[in-house]
Length: 216
Image 1: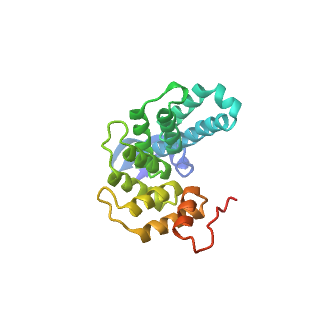
Image 2 (image 1 turned 90 degrees about the horizontal axis):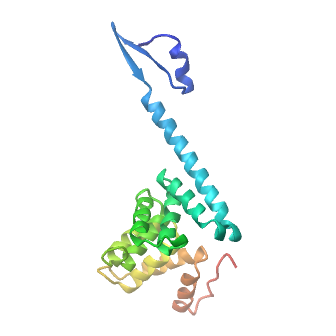
Image 3 (image 1 turned 180 degrees about the horizontal axis):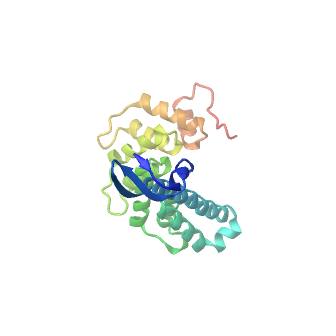
């Protein structure tokens, strides 16, 4: 295979180049579609993160957050539409809690699911919560919720570890009761400072030294 013209010298730099490829005696035009696609993905990720970071700056300033709720929602929407999972989670919260007058459980569910399906631990947890609460027309199902809590807990997300522990402790909705597994998960959540997990462990294990949050 021979690449004709000055195009060949650009290939190792990743610069888009249109040219001719000679295969035997035939010449075919080509476009480096894969390079374009990969470059676009990188650009989208960088843009999405920049939009999200800007939204977070507004959110972290209490005065700015109150005055710019619509701006925050717009920035999160732009970032979420570019596929940025953290923005999808926070946008889901905007619709779940009705911030800026945007209460809509169905839309919240959609964003949580998109983040969860990308493997985002917080998205998986919040999707589990939607099944626990039976929101947006979902059938209330702790069993389905546990699937998502499990995925999130495996990534070390403390709230998911806590809720999954509760399900194992109670053994509800077809979930096999497993106190040992429950305590193991509670300990993992407690080690990250989850206060509810700490409180339960202290009640279950009164003879042992009081579990304290590492954040104290």
